[in-house]
Image (cartoon, rainbow, N blue to C red; front, top):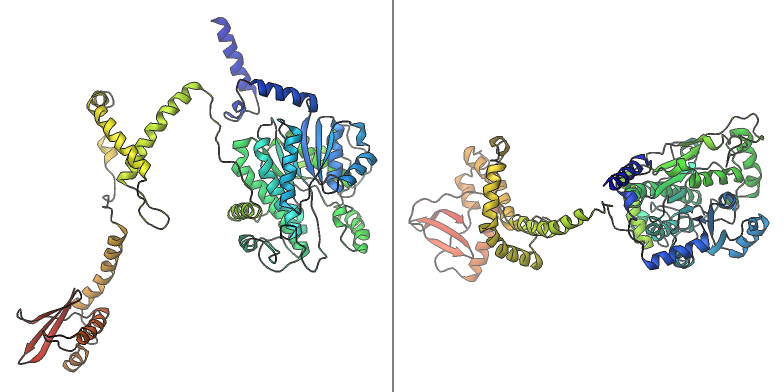
Length: 595
């Protein structure tokens, strides 16, 4: 007994002392391992050891190349380089000396211009890694084509900048996310940009401005010839800025929808302006020559590739960056002493130009109103899902593995279904068009079965239960039954409700005419003779009936009330309408139309 108590105490202390516990999330993988799982774990250990598995797109140049190198230097990661040109990646591997870390880097082909290539990459990744989950996904690859006078199209018929930078990464995340949820500290990072944030000088002061408007282009399918997300004319620089806006919005949406469910930390970053990056390879020669000088000595915003790569690496590696839903940025260091080594700390950054600030300069940056627009963000997620054909995990709340909860849940599920069927029969509800929802055949079967079984229970166990309930729980207080400002109205079907609404609309007009007749609405003897339809005798012909229908319709539409003088007036039935006509000495005096 003492041993059991001690074990329980230790267990509670472990739970209380953990800083990463979030509800029952830490219990999500609790189960007795099977033989197959034990065999798979052994294979993972032999292939990867204790290393985390990191996937980074665009690892053969620029920011991705430096971030991949930083991950490898730690000795804690096996890096998958997702690149378009595997031969180029192999050359970088040899030039940069990554061979010093044998068995820790694997290049894989990925052409972001093709959704089929994304699917193929994810399939090959699954085969390569086996049962090991991906721990980090760095969505880094991107293109910038500001000088293009016309759009280029991907293999799928979408504008290239948006597909490479955003849509293909969107699809890849949907494929890998469920697998990543099995990792202990999974992170998905998208590379944003100051140009996608219009609350800064770089994003809001330089035309064109990132703006998705109402996403009419995405809503229309975003296929050739539709080249922009907003559906308007193509501008190469704006396509890039819009794609970065989309990536930052995506991180926010995924955080809101899936962080609690999966445990994945979704974040975006702005690593700084990498003025000498291959990203600007399609700019004119003079720009590539003088832009770094301008950023370094005029604005002070220059960031080198090495430093930017360290920043992307930091968000993937630093324990402080496990927080989800953050847009990470860095404060630049002082101008003096910029070439000196910073403090001796693992992963410390030495800044250049207006960059720097080091490892501890990271902070949670503010995003613009456009990035935080919830309505457009949700529409972006839905339309991008339709464009890419992405399939996302269904919501799955993590619950306690307590066996008692499972037993109670199994019992209550059937009872809940029966009670809901009763409630829906009593008040079936309405669909989005206002039509009454009828019970399905399955629901009707449940109701019949419940009626048979319930009748027996109500007359046996139910009587005892009601008796005990009255004695133990007492009666419902009168104050709980009072306080409604209206009585519950009787349900009407759609047709009856429409007729009642029409009658309510007509009644006030007729009442107004009766109570306060004006000279305009009370015709003189001459006008009455002109406006009153012709007199019909009992031997009415078909032609006369057609005339009656037309004239009576006009009378009804005018909402004129014709009075009947005398009870002996003859009546003529015309397709549901009764025409009552009174004559004196063969001359028409008055007539009334009624339904």
